[in-house]
Image (cartoon, rainbow, N blue to C red):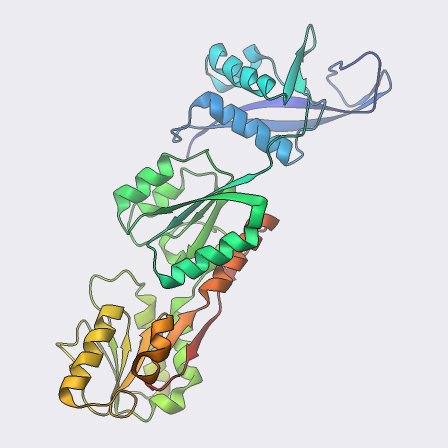
Amino acid sequence: MTNQQGIYTILRYTGKSEAGLQPIAQTGTRNGITISMVQYKVKLNAKSNLPKYEQIIQSLTDAIGAKQLIRGSVLPSIKQLSKELNISCATVAKAYDELKRRGIIQSTPYKGFHVASESIDHTRRIFLLFDELNLFKEDLYNSFKHRLARKAVIDLYFHHYNIEVFKTLILDNVGRYNNYVIMPFYHPEVAEVLEAIDPDKVLILDQPGYVNGTYPGVVQDFENDVYQSLKSRADLIRKYKKLILIYPEPNIHPKDIMHGFERFCSDFGIKGTITQSLTQAPPQAGSAYIIIADVLLVELIKQCHQKGLKVGQDVGVISYNDTPLKEILEGGITTISTDFRQMGISAAELVLSGRKDKIANPVRLLVRQSL
């Protein structure tokens, strides 16, 4: 990712003087003013669809919000910043005029521009991109929103596993938000699209394996989660002659689920099979099934009823991702599920704290009557 950067020296004033603001090119004291030299970079993102003057405004207000610039910090002249960023003076002037209109900067004859106020709008704007909306993603969203309370404005978008929608939503909104909280998916262009965003503003949710780099986030470790969940009740699974994972192709769920399944079967001597459909492995007494897609869960239960097989006695059933309906269906369906409510809370805390952690979200096997 290519950024244009205007690099210049900021003079940071502390103290008072009747002489007013007088830029000095070195650290020291003058007219009773203690001055410390700092450097700040105005960044322009070439991939952003945000106009350059708005990018300048965003960059400077971000710096003020982060206390990199304080009241009295001297800014470069319009001509100087224009030269540094290789853009027109009119573009810089438009940004400065808007900042002056908001009362954030001022200009003094013969002394130039400086920060006049640190009272900018501190309401955080968050770009939240989900794959799709379902009951457990709704839990995630509600807990995320509740934890942030009145500290942020959240705009929620959906990509529906469509790369063109994913690309358009992100590229059209680069530079418009303080944070980008994103659920990626498997596609070779996903990682490249994410590179258009300032990496310090990106937080990944749910599926970390589909992106490059070391983005912070709250994620699932699908292979280990499946392995540990099955291991926790291997005693129940051993009661069945065979354990079958129904993994249809193509599948929005990561293949790490299959790897965790295979490792469990190998380590515990379980006869395991992976198939793409119930046609290849119709329900039989003595078999247990792990179902990834809810539509196949319904089909499995229907076929059990047609064959006179009782779920939980003749046939074992484990479903992926818990919902309230699964608590009562067939007396209760056993599930492997992450805590989406906790995922939302943890993501909000990362946003508020600015920490760059990668958090493994808790997952557990909820045993009910179907196993």
